[in-house]
Image 1 (cartoon, helix red, strand yellow):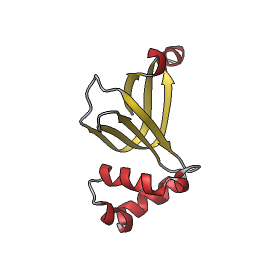
Image 2 (cartoon, one colour):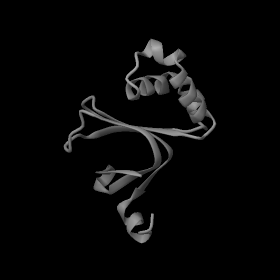
Image 3 (cartoon, one colour):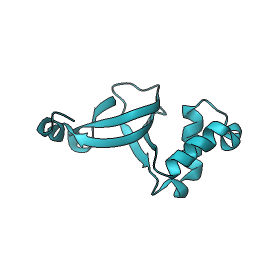
Image 4 (cartoon, one colour):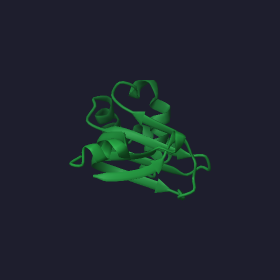
Length: 120
């Protein structure tokens, strides 16, 4: 399990919990970065975001965009995303850094919620 924590809107401290992490990238991120966008790609929205997912997987797997579309690795991961066996979360700070998590399950919860359920 990987856990990433940060202050979110309104200063509330949140944590991202990921189980069965297959791959993880933390690129040029600093503690002072301001989060611009958090995207979670699930079976329910993967087909609406194919190009965006392709780009993130390319960055995660260090592939050129042209190679990632037809590669066996991309096709396998994309199929598992499409059928819900994997989820993809991308955290993008304002200054071009990124955190990308590819895992079987990903959830976001407040630290207050985590304190109420310490076994999680």
